[in-house]
Length: 393
Image (cartoon, rainbow, N blue to C red; front, side, top):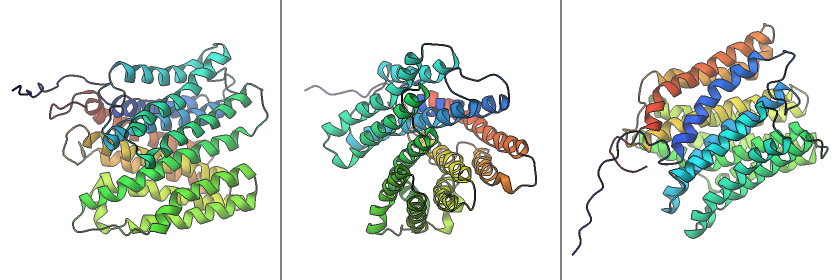
């Protein structure tokens, strides 16, 4: 009779042991440098990238398809492995996928042939979709097939953006960026619904979430309605869809609320991130009536919902998947969570401040960068070194 011996504990650096490691680390570093890099060139005569029409176009695209896509890749490659009990890329295949993401970030900075630059960026979403679709298909988890589909739709939105930049089609790039952001928020809405109330229940005593089947059905459905309304370009339809989404997601969020969540930073940062989504929907509805500029809603989505929620998810997932106790690795991380919410607050409501445009922009950038500097400072060893219990992953 052959007895299996346990593997020796894994030690040292394991940056490609599981998807969350390289992509969460890269997302943090990228978020740290992209904002000041763009801000330093604001109003300058030369472009950051010869590929994009202006520095704002580069900034918008890279925030979504650089930063947010890295967070989504890290989470899905890790979560799908847990959901399906099937392997997802690790080691060399994961490193190659990461290098593709990195090449797509670097290529626009140089005067490469435009087709090479566009192809590198366009390959990532469908390849990621394929890599998570395989284990989902093998395990017959039909409820998770929505994730590869959403990644393909995100890739489609990105394709229209690139075709417009290449002058091959005429389309509203701003609208396509908004649709891509809404598709990414759709992914976060599904993931948040699965993990945020679960995390809150685990971190509190005796709390049970309030959940309504109709609200859980409508939560992702509101994103579908808003995306179709966006495609119609009808201000009335967009406003109604956004207002409906704000109401549905507010009810969902209140069902997760307990005063006990304020005791645990890893929980309240996720709750506040979801609150920014509700604020974004509400501002989107008001913007369609001309009450305020659309940029308020877009920054609530980008800096608030996507920024705050993704930082909270990275912090929580990295701790859980490296064998650590479910708490902040250092008290200073509280400041990171406060600062990124402050960055969102300033960036969204900057026009209300009695300051010139560049002052609140600089303040928001400083708060954002300090937040990710703290995150990278404390999470680099967590993300790049082996689990503390010596297990694989």
